[in-house]
Image (tube, rainbow, N blue to C red):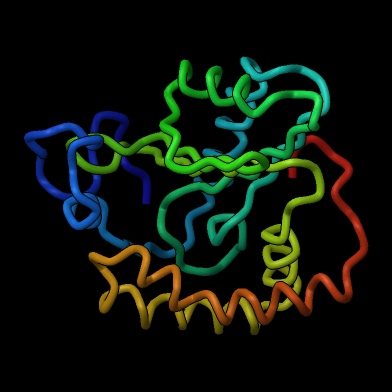
Length: 205
């Protein structure tokens, strides 16, 4: 699944900006869509990671490819999730401003976390879509879940089957889709955290 640089995925063109849409309108414009595994997702991650490192502060940042597109061999939404761990010395407000200046939209924020995305347009999904999760160091339960799926293919396939069973019923309800996956993710994340030691000492993974 590779989409041309000018092609959009999702619903027809909208007549108002995303900021003016209701949650239901956004769900219609950006439905849950699963695709077969595609090696291009790793390429997208590497290219976006390098782009981020080119304009973000130079010291102390760690980037990771997370989410289902980081697990070989399973269906996923063609949206690349990136975890950015930033030291306390870099204010979240500083990171927020530089990310907004470079094409990201801030969807949610708290004192120690931010969620941003790039590739959501009033005409639907852009050719490449990214979710960026900004955290403080070692706030990374997603890494444990990712590694457990990578190292336990049978659990990864069970997760794929769950997602595929949910995709159509929750096609236009992203919160419902996310909530329905929650117990499975929590179960295997807890197991992974119990058996893995810290293993994340590179800037890209």
